[in-house]
Length: 541
Image 1 (cartoon, helix red, strand yellow):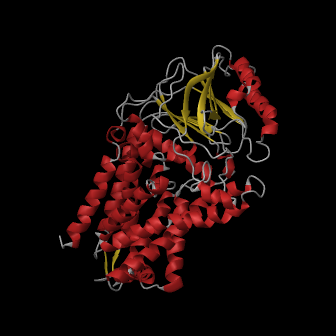
Image 2 (cartoon, helix red, strand yellow):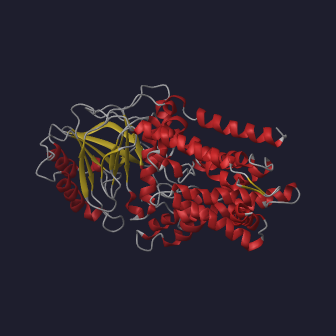
């Protein structure tokens, strides 16, 4: 009797929580979905409370349990719950996007509701479809965890591909932002992490079996063991010795921390270039504290409020700084003039050596909608809607293979701004070509100030390094700038929101990872296994 009395309050709580969610309806059900989704944002950078993802995933199971009625009613109820869930998740995780609307005075204030409310509302359609698909596959018992993992995991994968794609804050980043847990991405990639994270964090929803009023710990224990196995894999991998470094390479990363808006204007170009030169030359020459000469100087995305190739004075000052022994790799806008056509503007990475601008460059291929170009511009520009970055007609996307060859360095995978968040596109750089030696990510996150956005961006870029076993050099206007090895370990890093420079060696690439060899095949296999288990148990085993 004493043991029963001790267990009964626990059983009462375990029964009351799911029943309260399952039986909720109307505004209460919508509020539960919204708040549980919003809690998931605290599992992501900069908060990094990965275990908090248990809350939204567990509640998701119960919300779908409560989607009752005929087939159509069940699907509509699950879709609605999924939308409110997603709206809370994306609103809490992406509110900082609105900061970009306030940079240029009042020019883009009209877009503030679009960034803060409309974007999360649109993205919420993906988990809505994920919930609906899961409900189609639903069955009582622990197997419904696999149904949620497959349905929601597939919708997250689709979010990274459809309508130009936007895999920012994929659910798998709850694991991917933790250096130890993220090591498994070298095998399964981001999308594999997402399938696994959903299943692991949803398992506690099965602790209480309402049908027979019993406590069932087995699924949760399996999930805990899986999480410990992932952590063990990470600990073992991170025990590897410090990475070797590419010989005769010394990098200097400049983080100028120049705000967007009026300070970054053409009339201030002389002051901006002077600031870059002085910061790059900090310490009395392009030598570090150890006296070693800097071989490669790196500047961030769109470093100049002018076209570098059209400013011989600025170009001459840069050449005078770097001399014959240093090469500059910098973000810069560039323009191509073609007879009978409007000028084409590109968001590029340019290379400058002692002879001036090199013909070797990379043009950004995955442009930001409304940031770098305006979809349906012929119509929208008539009503005053333009992209944030002012280039006549918007930027033109680059073409060709994503590779950059700089003197004295291994071939690099160049990534401008949010190109680093697309695992499939970054992995495509390996297709049918020699393996590159490092990842270069130049970006300007000053648009978003000191908010969660830049931390989330950095974590996603670092995960690409872990997936592919390649070192990452990240050059950010306002931070976080960093050099990390192929395990994601920081060799050097600068804080967010400060002016700084960092000197570091370039780590060598690790041997090819499973993920770099096979891409999304492993993640796809995990999803199919979850689908098979769902269908198997749905038919009664």
